[in-house]
Length: 153
Image (tube, rainbow, N blue to C red; front, side, top):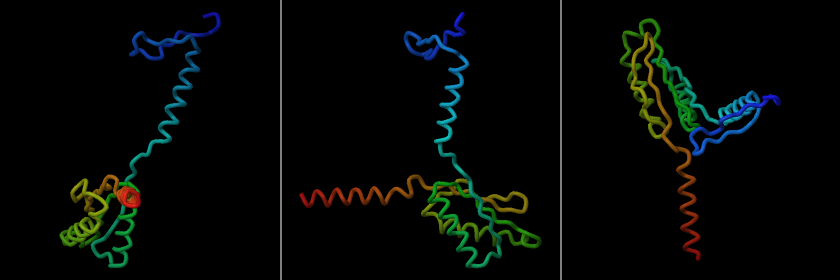
């Protein structure tokens, strides 16, 4: 205590418990620093949003579909929002059909996480990336190269 140090229990679950004589404030600072570094290196899941309209033309539809595919391949979730304006609400089934068509077209890259549902004037669906979707070809190439090496030996 004269030196300004404390008895700090480092690992209470160990048998016997591990303790050190040190400055507790400095210990907390180091602990927070480590936690901050760990959080920095974690990849958080992002939700990308793609907005469509029932009357979206073919080129714009394809452009947005390519965005959805790219987001899913990068490992992000995608929130598809079909926005209805004015009298379009009377024909919500057309928007639902277009959204279902988009979901089927990108089914190779992602799986449906939340089925389409109405929220106000918008029809919303969420797609999640397929696990390890981008890494499969690399494994196939590695297996092929191993087979080639075995055949050459």
